[in-house]
Image 1 (cartoon, rainbow, N blue to C red):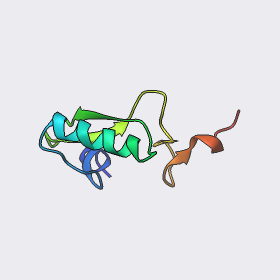
Image 2: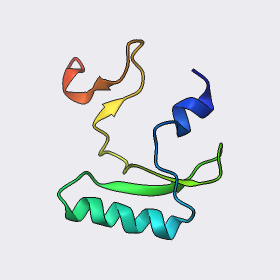
Image 3: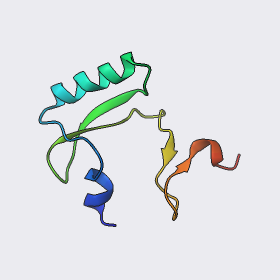
Image 4: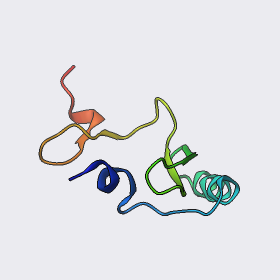
Length: 73
């Protein structure tokens, strides 16, 4: 899997940060995670990602994401 696939595939692409921020507020209002809008360096669109310190998983596992609750203490 290349960097583009990791960064863009499966993520909603928004035409502007404004529309991405609006969707992030809507998700938070529905009880979802704290997401932030960012401009993707690969496709140029805006995506939503977890705010710093609010990620639910890390992308370092060879067999997919490792949930933070599974990390050794």
